[in-house]
Image (tube, rainbow, N blue to C red; front, side, top):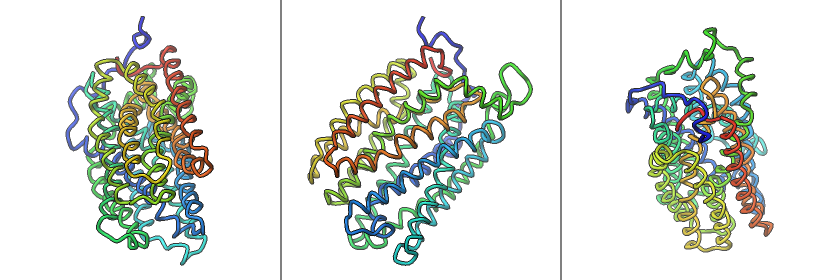
Amino acid sequence: MHPEQQVPVEPSANMARPSRRMTAGLGGGVALEWYDWNIYGLMAAFLAPHFFPSEDPTTAVLASLAVFGAGFFARPIGAALLGPVADLISHKRVMLISVAAMSAASLIVAVLPTYETLGAGAGVALLVLRLVQGLVTGAEAGVANAIGAELSPAGEEGRYLGLISGTFIQLGIVSSSAMAFVVSAIVSPDAMADWAWRLPFAIGGLAGIAVLYLRRVLPETLVTRAVNRSHDNAEPRGATSLWKTLWRARLALVAVVVVIGSVQIANYAWITGLPNLANSTYAENSTWVFALTTVMGIVWIVSGPIIGGLADRAGTARVFTTMRLALVPTFFFMLLYREQNLAMFALVMVIGGVVVGFNMCLYNYVAVTLMPREIRTTGVALGYALGVSIFGGTSSYLLVWLRSNGNFWQFAAYGAIVALASVVLYHLARSRGHVHVGR
């Protein structure tokens, strides 16, 4: 018997299609989270001399990227603290807190004094703000994906999660790239380096007000009884029971960590690592770098529901395996970009980015399928936070550092090995019955 048919599969809790306002509130928050998170990565080369001045531009950029990576390590803490709050008390409150904190931090970065005014304290303040953003986003992914799974029409879970966790994520990433492109295009290079890098942070912070308004209309949860009560007991569950259930699903949790971590290595290599390498080490024209990053992201936006719908029709395991194995040679494709060459940068970003984008459209849905409903927010949030922190948060730094040491090939080998491991772990978890959503 097919492994996915050996366990009962949960039906969608919502048989009616979600309203556009619900989808906008849920997806808009996901997009804003990724905009606020990614804009720092795109601006890292411009932040570096203001907060971490050094005679060596690469050293300054590495310090800036280290702060970018540090925010990832706060995510598992946020997931462990806020995930159970969402599962046991309130999804909606966690979602509102997340958006408010992300937006406030971005607004503060937009007006934060630099090293010239605060000395080393400027870098410390920047680090604290990134840690705050890491804490609140640690739970956002789990909450958004859990609610997305419940909002999705029956039999269309892949398509809807492809929209929420594929299209809207990429909309946030593309918006950040587009904003960086627009700002760098309308101001002089000197102005961009001096002060205009603050504008994308300010715009992201102000956008949070609109998202907070949209999220107010979301239901507390469509599955209150299913989330707050066990399947076999009418009594409300407590935190102890939740963690015990998660321990029983530990193989699935490990699979979620590596499934997410693998694609995040590629994601951050393409959306921050390669652009920062181009802007700093190779001194490419930053306007064209941001334009190419935006073009790549547009492909990702369109792909979300298409790849998710393909998983609904052809089977999640088959589509996931095909897409993830295609990622292996893609890591080595990036090795073609070894010197200043805008045409080669474009080739690597667009062609390699298509494969990365297809994987980005599917990984959140795969994570959701591996977690039972009663611990889905906590399990996905924790797995997501660990995967992004361990693998994604270090990706940009490793890429730039290994390239500066003449060991660029080691990054490609590392990404390929983790991609293969994600396929093995997914199929191992699937063979043990850890499939709860989908076919």
